[in-house]
Length: 326
Image (cartoon, rainbow, N blue to C red):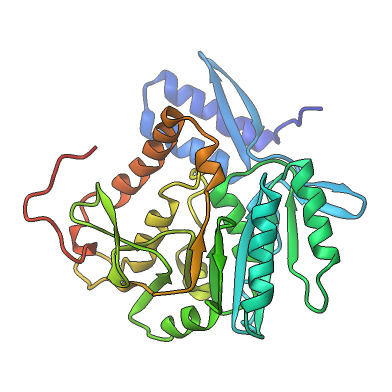
């Protein structure tokens, strides 16, 4: 059954329709933002419009809450941090990959490490396997947060980070396998206040249009296979832009957000560490056609350009003569 928008939202939508008829696009955009902030989206049909909830509904079944948006997930960000770090993983369609990552963490993570898994409307096979993984964990099992619909990469990570209790958040892709303790060195690197983001795999760019793998040391951004930052920085600079439904380039955008201290101020550092992390096949990438990969990646890349395209001060070694944007 479709939901009926409150009268106040209907009034905003009518005012926006009038503004569009006058070609007052600035006012129309402002009103759209107000509508969306209230949890609704407006769908135009010529001079008419429909209003729909901006997010899927929260669902309750068998005492489990399935969340329809990151905002509906209770946040721990205002609570005092506890432990050493929280590792966040996302479960979607590849149960053997998630099991491998969880087994690796169980074998290598030190005391004080908590784990949050976001079950982002997982496949039936993944959901069943996840239940089995939880059943075999003794002691301090991972927390699992379920969604009522597939919300996408950024929203799923926002959910996991909202539930993080550790002072350091480590985003671990299920294609990555720690073969020894990575939590301790990541947390130690973030004890340096000049460092904003650390991880196992770094990239550099000369023009913010082309990024290439870089060796351990200072880099321009950290790839999301194993990426760590302070929970307090997420509270201050987040959330992630949930228009990044596809994972590609979200890591670059977030690295730059974390490093950016404003134009005219020296940026904080991104540091790639030599960590014991094995990378396996990235199934989400390989499941797509080359054309679809390019389409989704480019859409996300434009979000980096929109915000940081002119910020050559964020680069460790900018090109003296920038190349054309791709």
